[in-house]
Length: 133
Image (cartoon, rainbow, N blue to C red; front, side, top):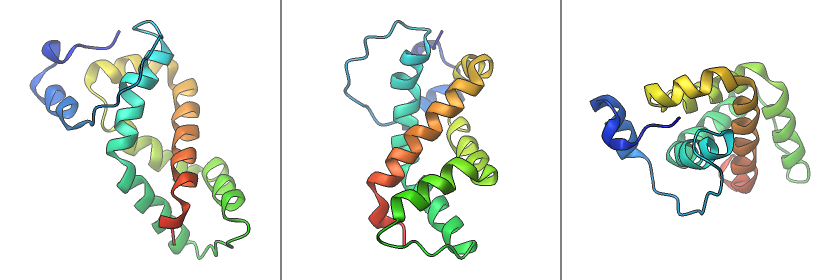
């Protein structure tokens, strides 16, 4: 179950206060993976957007990957789905913004939530491919 901001500890309250507000009608019941996606992952991804793009850009440059304009989407999809080091870095950037209660919810559903957060990150990167150069 996700915490209410009033029930959070001081560091957790500070983390929650940093997150942007996302207006979306979440129909999933509290304590479900769907609710976690809307209440936690989407705001954290939005908060970390610039850093996620910078990490992908740095990875592309460090590994001398030439993104061809005609094949950028395919190349980035392959990179984000197959490169374990990059995937773990992205997961760490996102989970590092979780509160203690969110992390406790994340642990048992780690495989499913990692899959979903990487899918969401991939969509964000592909939507902003022009910023990766």
